Image (cartoon, rainbow, N blue to C red; front, side):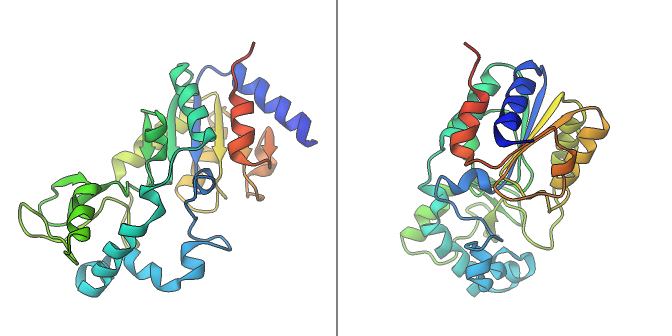
Length: 252
């Protein structure tokens, strides 16, 4: 199927669908200036030491790792990035009532900033902090303000415990309730639209065959090939921030 035919097929399917679930990955946010982790210019590719700050055991036992993590957060592009046109197109689709759930492996919160509400964050959020001991939470800006003011490793204001982002770290399991919500969303849709994900990391990648088994049609928008391209009704390779607004534009 050529690119134009794939686009027209995907657009027709999305217009006809009454219940759409979307799955997004790192490619959704690279257009907003947030690098991915595993790509050629990814955070872990360019700086393997960065993995240590994302590993639970290192983070909890080594103050130097926590200090490095807090410094990284102060200059992270996550907090200066803005949603791109693809994020806004998905928010518009949700407002139409046909996008029932947006499942994402991203932790940057750009979907919510663009206006999406029903967002299922598989890997947590970089925009929230959590105490490892008493589980108190709050906006990450609170802790970043303390770091900017001179604290190397801010502790919990309630119990003095170790503070971290709510993102899922290496050596941690994903939240069971979050996974259940994602499975329910994939199991009950007419169309599963995957955007900017290589579909190589589970359990997120497993949502595609699950949706197909339950009768959904899959559409894949991604720069590179994925293991599920052969099962999709349409595969698009265009730039996400340009093709998605065209793909989801309301009919006139």
